[in-house]
Amino acid sequence: MKNHVKTKTNLSERDEDICVDIFRNIMHVRHLMHQKASRVAAGAGLHAAELNVLDILGKFGPISMGRVADETFISPSNTTSTVKKLESAELVKRRRSNTSDREVTVSLTSKGTALFRQCYPRILGEAHAHMAERLTRQEREKLAGILRKLVA
Image (tube, rainbow, N blue to C red; front, side):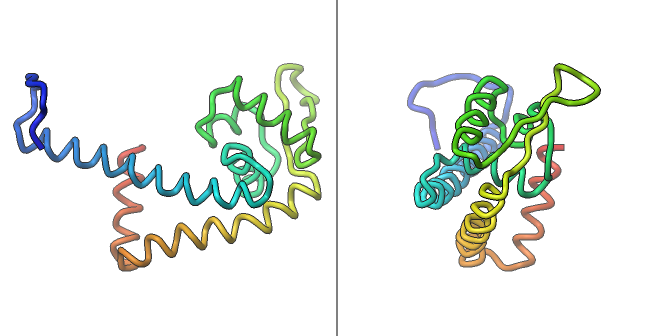
C-alpha cells in the first residue's frame, strides 16, 4: 500500500510493505481478541483489564503486583487501581510480603477462582474457534512459534 504522504525509510519498498502488513495484522488480531474478551468480561460484570488480571492469577497463582503488571501489559499504576477494584469486589486479595515491605502479592479469592473457572473456558473457546476456522493446527503451531520468536 502506497503512503498518501511521501516519506523516505531505510527499507526497500517490499520490506516496508511486509513490515506494515505484519504490524497492521497483529494489531487487528489483538483488537479482535480484545473484543471477544470484552464480551465475556461484560457478561461477568467486569472490564477486559479486570478479567485479564483474574486470568493471569488463575494461570500463575499468587504473584507480585509487579508480575501482574508485566503479565497483563498494564502499567503499574493502572494495575494498582484494577487490583483495588477487584479487591473491593472480593475477587482478589493483596498481602504484603514477609520479606519486603515494598512487595505485595495478589491472589484469587474463592469468588475470584469461581469466576476464573467460568470465564476462562469461554474466552479460550472463542479465541480457539476464531483461529481454528482460519488456520490448521499445524499453521497455529507455526504461528505460535513465530510469535514467540518476535517477543523473545
